Image (cartoon, rainbow, N blue to C red):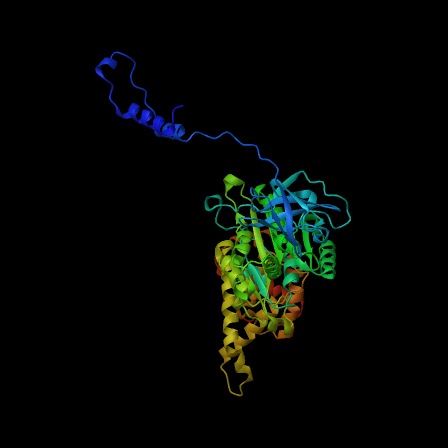
Length: 541
């Protein structure tokens, strides 16, 4: 048989040796391309059929086990453990030279040393698609709402490679949350990853549920992932979404606090898989991860049970990769792939407002900005307790109209200035009229940003509200009159705004161009409700 080296030499000689005189009258020498040379040198091996491997359980812990004998296993491969009380699945978590480490997806107490483990050669897949809308499932895609078995036609891998750079488009399409403070000062775009941080009981989950509720008729499918969630909170969340008619476009993925840490670790990836189905179908999805600090703790617990080396705060060394590979799956796909999007809003809990925590800083470095919910604002009665000064969106004005961008910048400047001068009120000294006006405008704006949970503002309404709230036209109103304005003006706007006015508020680029609309609205509102009218025409600060 001719060896590969001989084949290469023969091929090269055919390319480099000129034809002799005796060959001149015969057929010309055949030219062989370099790829053909490689084919000769490295012929394709015939496919080898994969045989099912059988191993043995050598260690069982709290939701984890170690198996020997599976030397051809791969990371994330599903294995089946045959116990005396049925079969239990597990996912390979890590591989060492003599064993594989896996997380158990069922009741690990049924497994004992010596049980047989069988490889499958496949990764875990979940049912996805519209049959899951309105349903409550666990991280394995199994129904938990007593509404029968889920009849899905499509399945998606739990772990999936995130889109590459060439597969993405820039984030330019806004995801309207209906929350004025977010849409104006911390805008979110479709395909963005925006972290939500705050202490316990500052309204993080409620704010995210408001965003889900406000996606009605926006063409956005929502996935709420509860990680280590209490059963009472899960029930309240379900009832709230049901009362707001949001379940028709929402799926809930729940891993309860008493579930094994393996399920809590897998829950966010299940939510990402559900959202990716819509994204790759050319549609738009929003995933709420509530919250990733609990997932990190579950991952730490699994790693310590498998005797992995601990690092900072006892977390394993690959804790950053845990979240980066999850959040990188959010994207705005290009038109070649359908133009779909997946937006991620992960929640992380802080301790006493400390944002320098290990997991918090990891998530900040991965995401495209963060929304900080401040306990001090909550204690003042301002909900949602969004601290605009401590929050940031790296997408910024790219997803805002020109007018919304301008009023958002005005509002941010007024609030920043208010934080600087608000202490002057407590000092027994005279302050200038300009400083008094700045303090009053800051108070007025904070009152405007305090928004009821069931209230939603459209783009045009947000522009009108903030354009008036940031201008001197409302300086003559007391704080009580501002509260009256905030509660009654939305309904007045919906009755008075014409189609032409709404179009102008969406498309004009300067506040001067819509000043007549703003003047007319505030004058009529004050007249109808017997409030003192503005004494000057509309002008910005």
